[in-house]
Image (cartoon, rainbow, N blue to C red; front, side, top):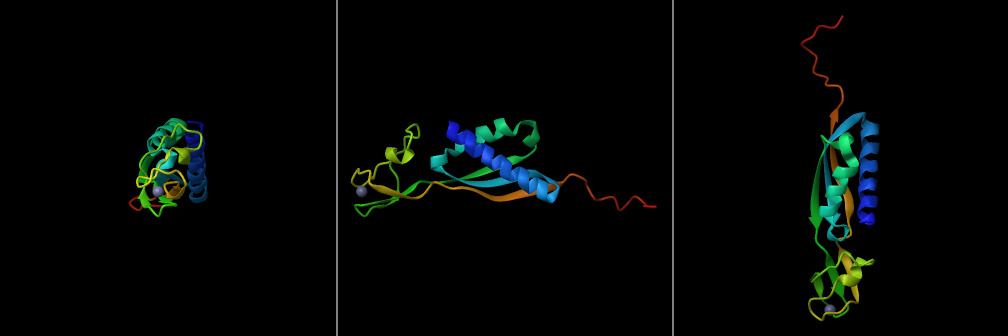
Length: 131
Ligand SMILES: [Zn+2]
């Protein structure tokens, strides 16, 4: 769980930085999150840690499945994962040989794909005459 808190904090800080750079507020944040990072749990933490500051922002998470490469030659999705293990990769077994000597080729992502921003000040004031 501590892991997701850390990841959520990292995401929120990155979004804050983008907001500061553009002087705008994030309305939509698109993320790519590998299954190892528990996208569901991460979403909850983003909401919890984001609080009022991000209550109008929408976090879209696209999940990246865990893909493995085994020493037996198997390449593809993993059979199972026990996220409660301290090292998640130990919980993954090869569906072909049941082995654990695997290389994880995907599923560890944590990327901000894009952030949709909204200017704090709406600049559609053309109807008003400026002096
Ligand atoms: Zn194998």
